[in-house]
Image (cartoon, rainbow, N blue to C red; front, side, top):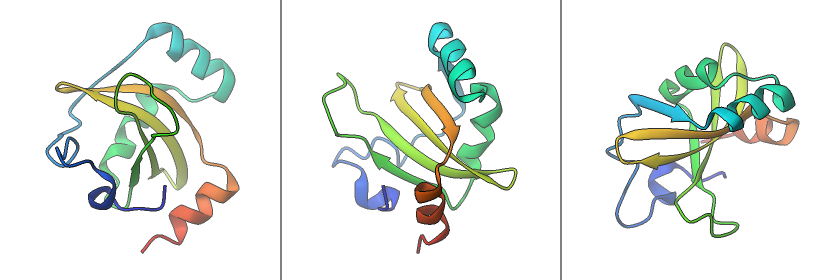
Length: 110
């Protein structure tokens, strides 16, 4: 993380035109996210509207698709959300409250 969306998108620019209007997820992953992090995917969708959000491509390993990590403010709290664009759909993979390090990174963004 730490880069702006424009600095971190590959040359096809997949996210620069993405409207983030339609969201979906795997029901099993949703249930495990609720149990592990106590965060419902439906509740974090408004975080995509945060004008100060930070999005970075997650290229730590080959996931078979482009994945992105986002830090975004929602109701006074920073969240870490992992997602991938699948055509017109934003597929949510994980959502949790940001840890202290991630909160500081969000607060210190330029």
